[in-house]
Structures are given as structure tokens and as C-alpha cells.
Image (cartoon, rainbow, N blue to C red; front, side, top):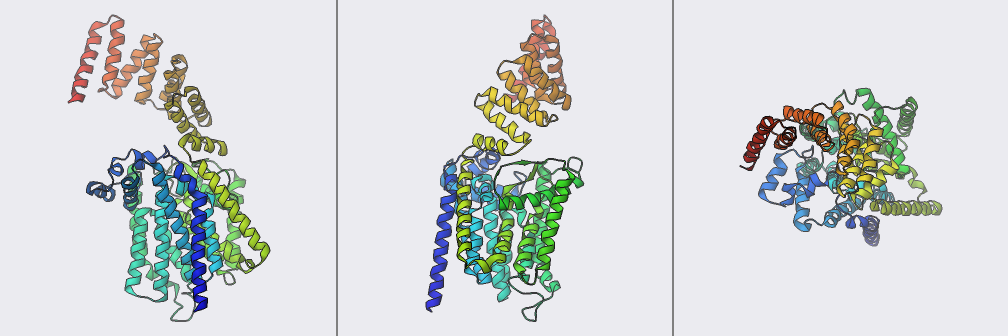
Length: 550
């Protein structure tokens, strides 16, 4: 009885230590602003979230695709945050932090129940709680889905373990229901049934042994069919959502060979960020081309680790389970189905890194009672915590975050462009222009970057410098209405009537209902004495303006 009380006391102390350490390391997020990179779409400019928890907003959450996904549970949490905190970004970040801290506690308790190893479970949970790669999932309000879905993933594993040790329909239904809730938060959990199979091997020991504990793989796989059905349904809905949002990349833009190469290199990059979490960024641009040595080296590394854990699977089963956990849970986001322009992302490590933490800790657990190892563990955890604290400061506001990103990454034309927009919005046109020019230097075929540079120069009344940028945007995208319109305005300001007329006419060819183009064109024609032609365009402008009012 005394031993049981002592163990319970130790559990409570570990939970308290984890909770406090997590809050201290991540507390900086509560002072951060929203980020002008998805947070508007998810929260600040989303009328359904802004309305809070209403019948209409709940129906919208379940009945619509938005932000290229279908994750109604995540929307409900965002709406709850809005009810509680309104526009206070710190409150929204606080709930993400509390979810993360809760995940660390549940991970510790779940692993301890699964394995009976208190120290190893505590260390895995501490690594999970303090690793800097997880800052993105906590500090970025739009990524609240990471912490919510992982909460249900850990709960699913715990419920499944209870079922595995004492089977009943109720326990199975609970595990299945928790898995469904996780999918409603983020569909990346579709490979969780694969994790449950791994846990059957270790630590549950449900396969390859004597009955009743030992069962053939076919039986265990059949047991997962309802989970796999839910995963398949979630995958299908997600595919439809991403197709409707236009973010699903084609094989023309991202060929299969490029996707495979990126997947191999990305796995190696994730290993590198695990061991040395520096130069963390909100966007790692997809390079599209990879040198042979990089792909070959990454492939050799992955093959060597896979071979090693396979050879050691009987002596160290946690190694192969943790390694395959890492590989498997990354499959939905590794880039074989390319969504967006990133090569990889810190947020994708939130659940997969648990597998690596388990593999690492269980491989050295026999050494954890040595003083030198204990000191090393304390140093590592302290270093991670401090690094995490510093990383949260990069998320202070969007400009700070983007400046950090372009500093620690290369050829990041999208972030240069987005930083330019923010600077232009603050009237810092010279700084904005510098970012736009860097974006198009990196990627000359980036049409929007040329257009944005032209707009910045126009706002600074540097019309002659703006013209070449608009010309290039139109050369790349001939029906770019805004570029034609702004180019026409530039020519008009430079008293170049003929090209101004030509581009306003091009605007009206593409969009005959552009009232402002009619009015501007009418003004130029009247100045040239072509009053009859001008009258036609003025009349069209007035008709369209009256129509828009009514």
C-alpha cells in the first residue's frame, strides 16, 4: 500500500513538473498577436468564427469546406475561443498552450500505463512538451488543430490499450469514437490505425505469442477495419475539400519524381530538426529540384536506420515501433500528395516525433540510472526549454516572424512577398519594394511578385519604374485584369494616352462590367477631344454604378 501511495505521489509530481515546465517554456505565446498567414481566414476575418457558438455557425462548421479542409471540431474550438476571449489573441494562444500541456500529461500517463516505466514515460513526455519544433503548433492559432487532434489521438491509444487488455464492445466503441473525434479535428490522424497495430506488437504484446494474448496479424488487422473505414472516409472528404480549394497540386507542377525526392529529403530533414532544432521557420520553400547527393544521402540514412531497427526488433522492440510510428504518421503530409508550396513543416512533427522520442528513450533507458546520464538529460531538457522560449518570441507578430523566416531560410520568395505586403500596408514602401524585388529575383516566373512591386512603385508615384513590373506580370499572365488596370493608370499619369487607352480597353475586354475602367477611359478620351467615345464610356460607368448600388 505504501509503495502504491509513493508511486501515485511520484505520478502527481511528474505531472506538476511537466505542466509547469510547459507553461514556462511556452508562456511567451500569450503575449503574441495573430499572424497574417491563415489566422485571418481561420479567425479574425471569418464571420462564422467571429459569431461565436451559434446554431448557424455550428451548422456551417459541419456543412462546409473552408480553408481547404473539413475539420468541424476545430472550428467549434475556435468559436469557443471567440466566445471566451473575443479579439484577444493571447486568449486564443492560451488555450493552445493548455491543450499542449494536457497532451504532455496524457502522453506521460498513457505511456506509463502501457509500459510500466515511469522514468522513461516522463522523459518522453518532457521531450514532447519542450521541443522547439512544436512551437509552431502552439504559437500559430490556425494550427490549433494539431493540439486538438493529438489530444484525441493520445486518448484513442489509451482507450485502445484498455480494450486490448480487457476486451469489451464498450471499450472498443470508446476508442473508435475518440478516433472519429480526432479526425474531425485534423484528418492527418488517418494513419493512427497503423500506430495501433504497432502497439499490438509492443508494448501490448498481442501478436506472435501464445493464445489468448498472442494473435495472428490477420486477426489484429481485421480488428482495425472500422478504424480503417473511418480513415478512408476522412481521406476522401479531405481530398474533396482540398480539390475545391484549389490547393491540391497537379503532377505537371509537382511531378511524381520530385514528390518522391522531396519525401525522402523531408524525412531526413525532420530527423535533423529533432536533433538540432535550429533555423525553424513558418515556411520551408519547396526547391522543386534536388541534387543527387542530397536524395541519395537521405535515402541511405533512412535505409540504414530501418535496417538497424529491424535487426534489433527482438531485443529492442520499442526501436522499430517508434521508428515506424514516425515514418507512418508523416505519410499523409510528406508531400506524395502535394498541398501548398512547402517542402516540409514543423507543425507536421507534432504527433510523429512521439515515435522518435519513444525509440530514443527506450533504447537508452538502461543508462538512465547513471548520474552522468541524468545530468545530460537535465542539460538537454533545459536547452530545449530555453530554445523553445526564444522560438516563441519569433511569433510575436507577423513582421517579426517573416523577417526571422527569410533570415533562416533560402529562396523563400513567398515569405518575401508576404513581408512586402505587410510593409506596404504600413506605408513602408521602400522596404516593401526591397522584399518584392527579392521575391522576383528568386523566382522570375512569380507573377504576383511583379504585380506587387508595380503597385508599391505606383503608390510612391514612381510610375515609370512601375511600368516594367506590370508589363512582366501581363507577359506571364495575359488576362491579369488588375495588372492591365494599374498599367493603364501608370501610362495615364505619365501622359502616355495611347498605351493607357490600350490597357483600359484590355481591362474591358476581359471584364466589361468594370465601371472604374469605363470612367477612366472616358476621361482620357475626353481629354483627347473624342467626346462621343468618351460619352459612351461615361454612360456605361454610370449604368454599372447605379446597378451596383441597387
